Length: 113
Length: 110
Image (cartoon, rainbow over all chains, first blue to last red; front, side, top):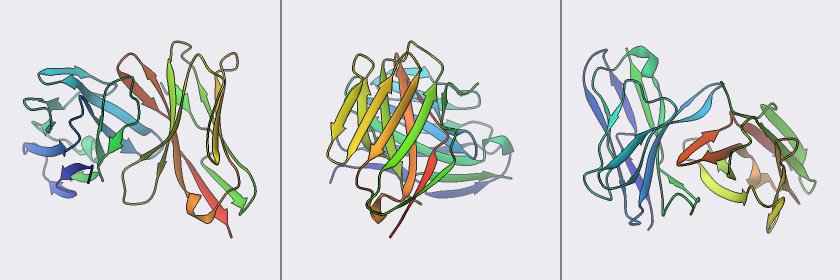
């Protein structure tokens, strides 16, 4: 089954404790990206990757890091989480930028206290 | 500053009638527009898209209209079904980046 898998689904952490949210896709897609969803703000793109070792900032990259060492995986790293990073996070993948149908993961609910 | 706006947070429609969801954007350089549907506790799923060089795209019960002069996008669902009840997001692409609206919650009343 074609899917994008995020882990964990739920996470509560404390301010400053480094964390990683994993994202994996099984469709051999080139393009992957991370979004956060906040009330009244919709989905905002954090980072995206056009292919292995190629990543770039989206609309709200501050406080986040990503890496793309393998085509299937695109982890999101919060080096020093803060309460304003409490949000619902989605990972997405698509075949390419112009093949615009993106497949989304089920989301990760992160709470930073 | 929000470049893609959905000014109606919610919409209720009777089953069988037409649902019209609206979206406005500010950047005339957007080259592709998309609609996604989202159910609770799930990720968004792709619905339909339209290139900026077209003004209409149809897929079954779903039609997207693009009015570039007004910087306005709309999604028509005909006929509406109870299973269409979800949050709908419009999105626009610029280069390799995507910008989403805040979503409209559609309720289709049986």
